[in-house]
Image 1 (cartoon, helix red, strand yellow):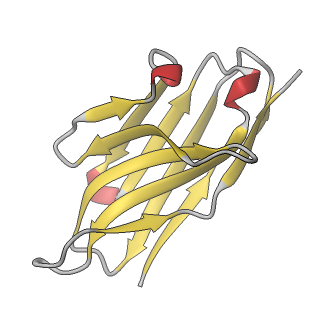
Image 2 (cartoon, rainbow, N blue to C red; image 1 turned 30 degrees about the vertical axis):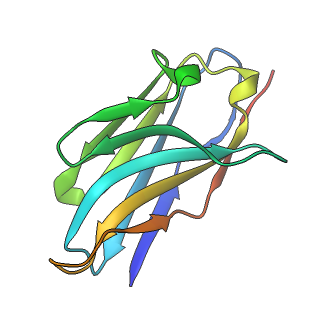
Length: 121
C-alpha cells in the first residue's frame, strides 16, 4: 500500500505565506514526479506545481513567482512554499505523486487527503 500524508495549510492573511508538505510511505520503488493540485468549489482540479525526479519544474501561470515546489527524494517528501498569497488562492490543495511500486510497473497516481487553504483578512 502507498499513502500520501499532507501537513500545513490553514488560514492566512493576504500577502502572507504558508508551507505545505507531503510525505509518501509504503511500498515504493520510485517516484517519477511529485506535485500539488488545487480545487475550488464547482471547478475542476488544476495543477499548481509539479517537479520530476530529475528536477524539472512546472507551475501554473497564476502562481509563478509566488509558489515554489521542492523535494527531498531520500525522504519521499516534497514541499510547496506559498508566498504573497491572494484571496483567489483559497482552495482545497491536494498533493500528488506518480509512483512505481515495482521496477517494471507503470507509474500510478496517488493523492493526499486534501487540505483547505483560506486566504482572508
